[in-house]
Length: 193
Image (cartoon, rainbow, N blue to C red; front, side, top):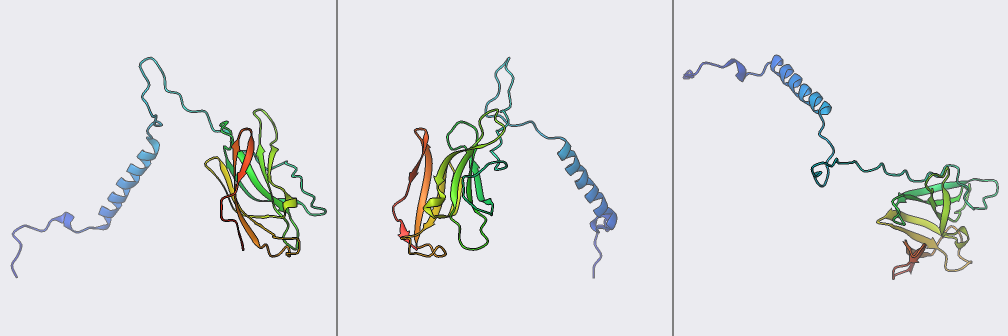
C-alpha cells in the first residue's frame, strides 16, 4: 500500500467540536434573522415627498355570542353547528354565516342558515338575512363561504310521509348579494338521494 503524498489534514475528520461550532453558527444566524426583519412590502414605491401608509386593520367578523336565533327549541338550546365568514355585500366588512339547529337529544332537527353583520360602532351583531328557515326541514351539508357567495347542499324530503331520519332529496344551493338582497340560485341537477 502506498502512502499519500499529502499529509492527513486535521479537518478531514469531523470531531464533536466541529459539530458544536457548526450548530452554534447556525443558531446565531437563525437568531439574527428573527431580529432583523425587512419592512412590509408595497406594490408601488412612494413618490418623492410622500410617505407610504399601511392598510387599515381588517374588521373582525361578527361573533355569534349574544345573538338570539329565532328558533323554537322548547327546553333545549339553539346551537351553532357551522359558521363561515366573508365579505358578502362588498362593503369591506365581513359577515358571518351560521348553520343553527336545536340541540335535540334525539332525531334530526332541521337546520336554519342566518347571515350576521355588525354595523360600524354597534356593540352586537344582528341577523340580517335568513337563507334557510327551519320550517323548510332541510339539513345543511357542504357549507362554505367563498368569493362573495354562500354555497351549501340541502338535504330535504319529497313529501311529509318521508321520515325525518332519512332525507330523500339533495339540492345544491348558492346565495349571492344582488340588488340589496340575497338571491338564491340552484344549479341544474337537483336529484333524489
